Image 1 (cartoon, rainbow, N blue to C red):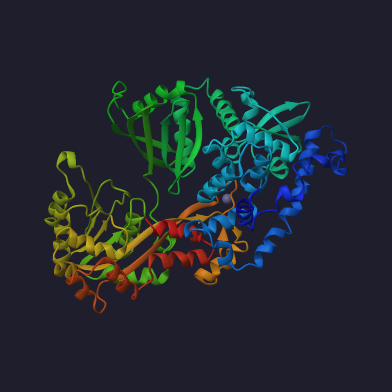
Image 2 (cartoon, rainbow, N blue to C red):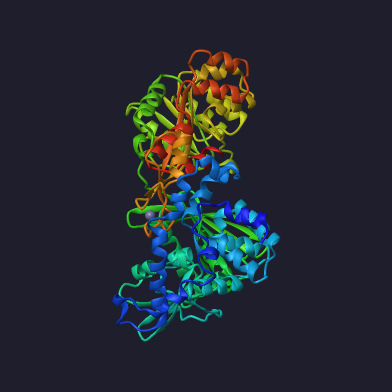
Length: 626
Ligand SMILES: [Zn+2]
C-alpha cells in the first residue's frame, strides 16, 4: 500500500481501531467455539455468533479507546483537512460508526483481494469524505468499485455470519411483518427465516442492528443473524408489506395512509410512482421521510382513490390537478389538499393535511423567550403601524401572528384577517379567503376591509407592490396591521419593501418592527449528552452549554427529533440611526449589522436553544442558512 493511502486511512483518527491491524479479517469467527454460560441451553451457531460478536464489540463501545486517543488532539488538528460544513458530522460519524461505515477494513480488504487498486481506494475515500453520512459502502457502489453483494459477502465474512441472497418475494409476508416497517427500513434488517423456535434475521450492517436490538424487538426468542445485500433486504421489506396489502383495495390503503398520517403529526403524504414501485414518503416536522412502497400495479389505483376523494377527474391524467377533501378523526377535522402532477413514471400525488381544529398556541409555547414576547407585544400594541414577520414557507410566520393577535387584540376591537388559505379559524375575527380566480386578491380584499372600519388587520402575505402599498397606507392611517413577507430575515423585510417600490420614508413611517422566524426541530427525549470530542469543539466555537445530540427511538421514528420550536429575531425600527440608514437605502449586510446591535439575532436565539439541549447546533445552522 502506498504512503498516501496509509495517510488517508490514518486521517480519521477518531475511528474504531483498524481491523486490518488488529487481526487479518475475521477475528470474531474464531471465538465461536465457546458457548457462553447463559446461552448454554440454546443450540445453533448463529445465535452464539451474534452474542459473541456483540461481546467482542462491547469493549469498543464502552471504554472507547479510540476516543481517548482523540482527546489528546486539539479539535483543529482533527478538522484540519475538512471543509467546515462536514467537520462536526464527520467527527460524530467516526466516533461510533463501524462495519460498512468504517473505510479501514472494507477498503483494506478490497485492496487485498485485488478488487480495488490503492488509487481507486483513495478516490472512494475522498468521495466518502464528501458525503460522510451515506457510508463508505455507498461510495464504493456509486463508483462501481464494489457491488452490494460483494460488500455484503465481505461483511458476512468480517462478522462471522452466514451470507444469504434473498430472492424477490422469498420471505413469507407474515414473517417480514414481525418487525415494524419503519424500524426494519431504518436499520436495513428483515426477519429472514423461522425454524423450530429460532428466528434468523438478515442484516446489511451488523453494528446498526445488534443482538441487544433484536432482543428488544423479539423478547425471549432465540435469534440468529445472517448478512444480505442492503438492496435485497429493502426489497424484501417492501414485498412483505405490499403483499400484506393485496386483499385491501387501493381506497382502503389510502384511508389507512391518511389515518396514520393524521395520528403521526404528518403534514404531507407523497405518493410517488417509480418504475419498480409506488413510493410513499411523509413530511413530519418539516422533513420528508421514506415510509413504505407498494407494487407498481397499485400506481393507478392509489392515484384514482386520491382523485376520487378530492372529486377530481380520474380520466385526466395528463394535467396537474388540485382538489380538496375533509377527514375527520374523532373530534379533530383535517382539511386535505390533494394535488397531482404527471411525471415520467405516472402521476405523482401529494396530500397535504391541515388540522382545522388545532389550538392556537401561546407565544411562549411556540418558543419565544419572555423578553421577546414583551418586546413584540409592546410594539404590536401601539395604536398604528405595521409589523412584518419574515421567513420561508413553513417557518411559523402566521402561527406567530395569530398568537400575537390573541394577546394584543381586545374583545371590543374589530379584527379582520385576509389569508390564502385561512390557517386558523377564530370565530371572533372576520376572516376572508383570497381567491385570485374569483378576483378576490389580497389587494381587493384589503381595500374592501379598509372601508369596513377595522381596528386590526392581518394581511396573510404581502406578495406584490399593490398589496404592499395598501398595507403601508392602512398602517399610516390609524390601523394596527400585521403581515408576512417571504424574505430570509427581519432586516431584509425593509429592503424588500423598498425593492417593491415603497418609498423609504413611508417604510420608516409605517413599519414598527420587523421579525425573522424559523421553525427548528426539537430533540426527542431519547437524546444524549454530546460526546467528546465534538463537545469540546462545539464549546470552543459557541461557548459553554448543555449540548445534546439526537439518538433515535420508536417514538421519533428513529429520527432523534420530535416536535418543533420557533427561533426568532425581533427588531424595532425606532432605534437611533435606523431611519437614516433606511432613507439611504443601505445595503442589506450593513443594515443587518446595524440592527443586530439592538437585539438577539435568529441564529443567536437558536444557539441559546442548542445550549439548553432543546435542539442541535446543526439544526440551527441549517435553518438560518436558508
Ligand atoms: Zn426518540
